[in-house]
Image 1 (tube, each protein chain N blue to C red):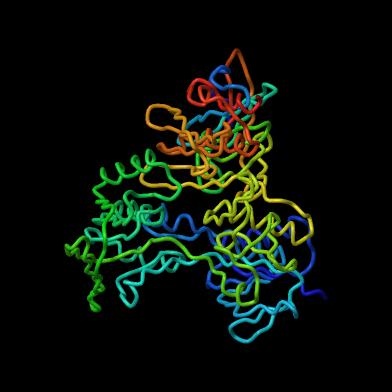
Image 2 (cartoon, helix red, strand yellow; image 1 turned 180 degrees about the horizontal axis):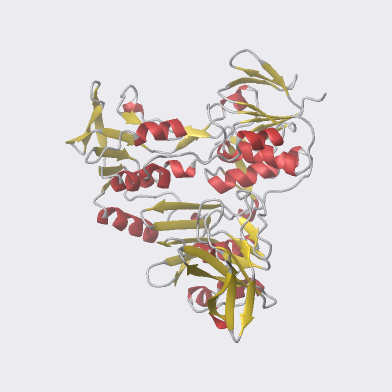
Length: 104
Length: 410
């Protein structure tokens, strides 16, 4: 059963930035895009299990802090070497200043 | 059918180049020739987490299925002995002749050998997965491991061996570790971490003698006149580019196979990239360098592939490399020795970045260290500033509360 989990406050994430969110033994990354929308993906890079929340967000791309693997965090699409496996994405909604993630 | 593209060297650079040819839409034959028996794999873990782990494992760059799908003709355990540039063919060790339209030399580098250690079985080097397996098997708890060379390979292996329960002594002839390309402030942090782990680092030493016990493979060293006994001696004193097949065929060699900004050698049908190639760094006014770095191998492999397809693209990447030791990770963007002044920025409580500025105020390098990936994001932003020749104000760089991203917009 998938449920909506409160990940953080809206103000916890700067625009064009990312934070880490751990829940039930898994780690996720919560993004705020330059146009002020929120997104969520798995928190670890598919290349070497590095926390993406330490990486850099530029437009709709998250770049792994270790080896510069790049993903579109809105779609999860891997954008070339060294990553070739896409990121899992999760639905996100904002309600009364809180960011909720649907983790199934 | 045309002979197509041939790539010599199935490491990071060669493997990325073959994949890049297909990504660029090239449809002709692609042949990848590797000296090792393994599928192309990533080398960085061999001295880092792979060596410290229970099993080294192998991180394959492209597995057999992916290579098949990309129609890459992979030839492993194959040695190229000669290039005939007039006939545009390669001769393999077994006598086979391979024709090419365009050739990429991604032959990499090999460990620099220590003359004193020749013939001493207890003395080993690290380059390949097989080398790593052999070393790993001998990192038994309480074994005494002597490591000659306080560079990245030596220090990463020292950390891994220490984490495996070995007693470790690092011997460096220079006055400090990481003399080449790493600021003293960062080298000091790394040295302290080794000290906490019980690794003994001795700098400025002179090693006068080395003998071996052939039955136990133990090595006896005389260091500054005093004898040291080691169960295993690892030599990590740098690498030598594999340029022989290039120079034998008359290609220009200058601390590596000499290429231009497009990775072309002195023969327009032959390219070289990665550890084996020396190239002009456009961002430093064409200074000729050779980089032994994972990301450089990838980027140059892909760039060479595009230019084998006549894209005419120039190299523009900023050099970048990293090292992991214990819980620390160091990252450097740019070449530190291009800087004349340094600005320090604290990143949280236990991490910092040094920004290296040229006389005219241009940011030319950034080096940082901290636990985990504490400095990664700021180093990446610094890399972008370096790439565009930015002259960010020193007080802004130093101020932890100024976001580096805001300087990119300036």
